[in-house]
Every structure is written in structure tokens, then in C-alpha cells.
Image 1 (cartoon, rainbow, N blue to C red):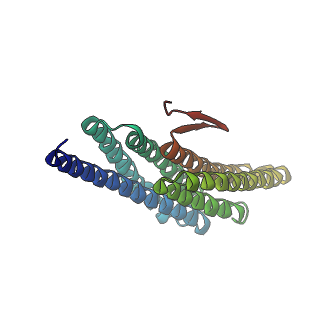
Image 2 (cartoon, rainbow, N blue to C red):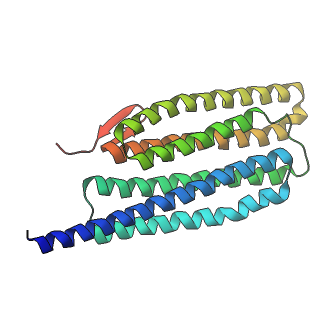
Image 3 (cartoon, helix red, strand yellow):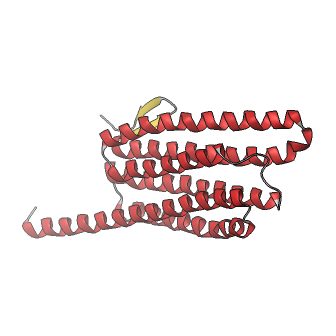
Length: 239
């Protein structure tokens, strides 16, 4: 390879790296949108702010459109660049993470719709544990995106272990919320409808934490080539 050919390849690599950076930036933007959606949906529920709930629903279209644009961009990069190894894993992981973020946006929209369905009714019980679940789930989401951005195997593995512990905490809170609500229904069956609303909300928040775990696992795939299925590691790197 002569010097001119080397320069051309170098320029091509630099341009590809810029495009991968743009893809990463779009994912960070989308993550910010869904984090805000979850926060706004839970605040609107707590404060019985119907207008804010409706805004969350309306803004979900923006999240959906962003996911679609990322999907198209990933497909175009694969078609045009025919990436291999780490570059291909980075694009595939980005595509999968965008899908996870879109689903988290749907959970926020679902919470907002539940809030509207509740109308002027106050929540059956004071909202303490559900917002705590929400804070932990959003924190997990932030950390999972950090692991994706780092692309460092040791960093990703450390974050995955930490998130597994935090996911257990969210699950414990979810179980507590369910138990508390069932006790209220047992004490007065007329509480069933309002209890069901809050159970749906808690379920959606618990699923946000699960999706954050999925994102961390996709980050591990990007960094190592290993797919995670539960506790099973599948190495996709050829020997």
C-alpha cells in the first residue's frame, strides 16, 4: 500500500468514526427524552396534573420518530460501510438500544394515560415507593447508557453487576407496592379500581428497570461480543 492509498483509508476511517459518533449522540439524545418522559409522567401522576400527563402522551411521537431515524441510520451504515467485528457490534447494539428506549417511552406514555383515566381521583395511597422505584429505574437507565458509551469491557462488566443489584431493589419495591395495595383492597373491596391503577403504574416502572438491564447487556455485547441470556454468556466472537 502506497502513502496515497494509506491517506485515503485514513480519511475514510475518520469519516466512519464521525458517523458512529453521530449515532451515539442520537442515542444519548433519545435517552434524555425518555428519562424526561418517565419523570414527567410520575410527577403528573403524583400532582394530579392532567395537562402534564397529556403532554407526555403527545411527546411520545417525538420519541417514536427518533427511534425510527436511528433505525434507518443504522441500516444505512451497514449497507454502505459493510462494517465488521467491533464496528458491526456497535451499530447492532445501537439499533437494539434504540428499540429498548422506545419501549421505555411507551411505559411513560402508559403511566400518563393511567393518570388521565384516574381523573380527579387522588391516588389510593400516598405515592412514596413508586417514585422511589422511578428514581432507581431512571438512575439505572443513565448508568446503562454510560456503559454503552464507555465501550470498555471492565467498565461495562462493573456496571452490569451494579445494575443487577439495583434491579433487585426495584423488584423488592414492586413486591412491596403490590402487597400494600392488596391489603387495601382486602380491607375495602371498593378500593380495587384505584389499586389496579397504581399496580399498572408500578408494573410499568419495574419494566423500565428491566429495559435498562437489557441496554447494559447490549453494551456488554458491544464491548466483548458476548450475548447475555439471563445468566448465560454466549460468545459470538470466532476463534
